Image (cartoon, rainbow, N blue to C red; front, top):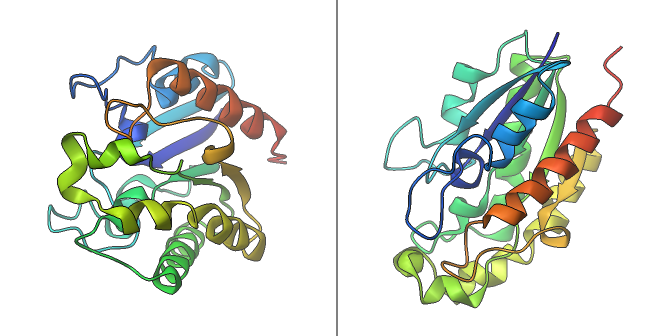
Length: 206
């Protein structure tokens, strides 16, 4: 049986924008994948609230993507889904577009260093909406955060092409919740699961 690692942030973890709880497995996209692919793939859920991709997160190693990746990514993993980056553009970090590019490339190279045969699906996050400035997470974001979120798909796509990764642009597929402008409602998780499932099934692992 092949193994898929879903390595991401709160939207992989299944953060519910309405009440801050975790969506059950039947609702969060990585949980739906786990259920739908259980006959063919061992799907490992490795989402974490507030996890960054390449920024050193003051919350710790578990919340810092490139530092904790080796804990989850082993040589037994066949497909790695990287669904990170939206937390790196919080106003506290304020990375330049060049730093975002370098950071995304860094985690891809790290993954390939850990497992040279890994197939990577690079998932560019949805753009933030102006609702993020009015919701619970307003303290983390500003207008620059929103503006940068619109640039990320282009950066991720270029990285995917450069390093021969599969690419998914969530901004073209799903929309963040009006509640907090950052996380996904139940229906959007279902869409994400379908998109990623189709991408997984199209990958040749022979």
